[in-house]
Length: 448
Length: 177
Image 1 (cartoon, rainbow over the protein chains, first blue to last red):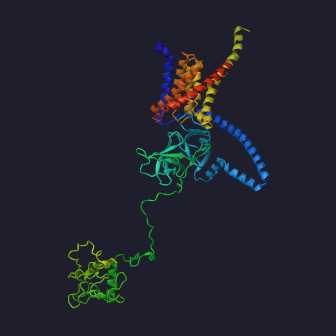
Image 2 (cartoon, rainbow over the protein chains, first blue to last red):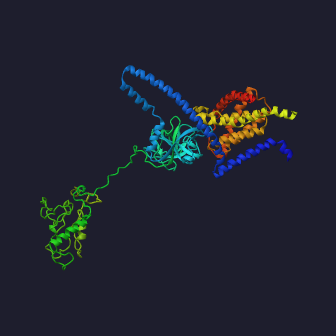
Image 3 (cartoon, one colour):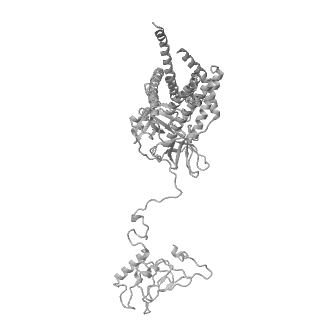
């Protein structure tokens, strides 16, 4: 054993070191826990230096930039003075101010207007690794930052906090291959999952090929992932071809055009509505909600809150006739005089034939309801509850009912029930005419 | 003054200088390398592919004279890199441990002062580093990352080109101290 160890000492040490690190990785992967001690040490050692470097760079570069800006302003002033136009100078100055408005101002305005509680942070360094897209920001757990918080800019989402250290945080950008977030399209409200690709564009996955997504359409956060509040812009669609099982929607992120310098970390997110776009119209139309005004009710149609059907109205009419003529339905011996049903009005407000105000009958056989309809003869359009044959002593049955009319069926129900069956007049179609399923359709007078 | 005290007096300044260099070598230079990898690509994104920590590891391994210090050196730099990434700690550690070990083993068989050999070794170890990291990512973490061999070769050549002046500078720094 000693011989082996002394001969293969280097190899043994190598194997021990590799095995130890493999076990370390296995522990982290299996328990999904981190080794905070090593990370905190490393980050605490590196980030202060980065912060210092960033400060030096900013002030040095800012000084140089200011110098050149002053030179430009001086030359510009001389040129403008030569033109002797103070108004033009002011105008140019304001325009230049507008065009050079820095991101910090926009950020503060956005921060003030956004309902979410945010904290501003500055990017101070990149993470290691060529494939990973992570950056360090100068806000950590002492500023209230925690893992899983969303990171945004006024232009859109940037990423999410994956680790929070006391003085800095590690932010995974949305372009990282392991990044994912729930998104929804603005126009067609198509839901999907945004995934980083390791380069400048992201992929919206899990969108069925049948869904419709337009080029140039905006995607917003949907809030489904519980990290990004709903309503933050994500980016515009650059391509959306159909894939094998899902659409391959490529989105150009809007949150970090040309890099990211200042960001906002969302401490307490508040969902917002996705800004209104053209919402895709459904294939059907929806009528407006009905109003309960009598003015919009068609004439003759049932009034809201009143009797609803023709049978009910006819029943009420017969009842009124009974009251007017002091007749109580269901009383009296068989053969006693029934009410005069020839005086009843129509249920649609048109007086019945023979009633006061009724239009004059102009066709033979249609003037009174006592006429029998001949086979093949057209049935009158107006309701005509036929009067019982007075000459006959047993004519106490309800009026003759024509099935082609729209009321008599109800009339038979509301009339006093007698053992004698009512006389039903059926218009017979011509012999060579096929039978019609709905007799009212074959009657032009009724159809009017 | 005895011979012993005389030797002590003459040897102390040299020893102090050696200690200072060791601290610089072990702490400051790796820190600068990691910092440059973290900070510089913010302004020059292309330099994200410059693996200065790897080149420092290779140089240390080629000049340290033993595989064991080299593998521990590589492991330490790798773990610091892991700490600054969002990957589990140990991925870069394993890869750089192997790079340190193999580079130190190679230095016993080749003339590592030759620029051509240095160039080839730097290129080889860059390619090995990237490839082995990709293998570990797939095997241990199950990440479906792609490996662009052509791009890796190009960046390997660039890293090797940077390694030549860098190694010379570090050699001079070591000799000066």
